[in-house]
Image (cartoon, rainbow, N blue to C red; front, side):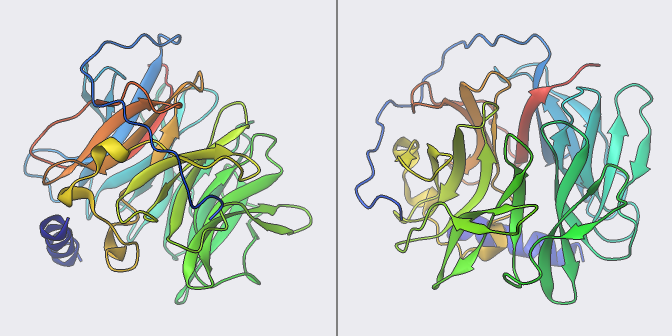
Length: 326
């Protein structure tokens, strides 16, 4: 991963423990066809298009076919980190077109982009609530990063983490929209936590002292959480119960010198790696490194049917899986 890290650093510069004995699945990467129940099921991700200096947001079918640009590069570092609304018609994403990272929405009906971030701060990692009525996101305040929730238009903004940590990241909603899952550093490592929106009660879900856990994603039925961890010295995808129990590594078959990883030594990479559940809750899409760049993979939630769905000279970042109607 060291060569890739250098490439990422140069690119960015130029653009401005629940369980110690985790059971590992050994199923191998298989080239197979997978049937999904939703004919509107689509994976969105970010990648540079041609000679563009920044990213565009692409769509691709879950089997790796029918790739197309959904939101083209506009300016600066471009467009990345999409989130699909439960109503299937709107994409929330990060864009540089308003000066620094801001949040915006893109309508599949009108092809129009609407700015959501109301201030001059950097806003990143936005995600729709399960009912589609609110959003959660990171917002930089000085040298701190906090988790906020707001209405869809950015109004009635609430800071959830101002008394917790100065570096809170990668928020997502619980199934009932009453809590936010995110991660921050405690006792020298990152853990995945949940915070009750009303009471502000915080629970440590991964509680892992042997490595860093980050970038959670809640299953459509609210029963499981997928997340990344470097506890074994690699960039691994895990699933666990929503309570934090039964943490299982799914990606030991991807272990190689290319995806060795340490969150703090390779901290410029944490934002690239995302995981997202299929609409039926049976599969996951995630970004990882198999060779010298970042590709997208799908895997069944029990660790079977691991499949690489992109294989290009460029890297694919921040995937999300949802139903999207054109």
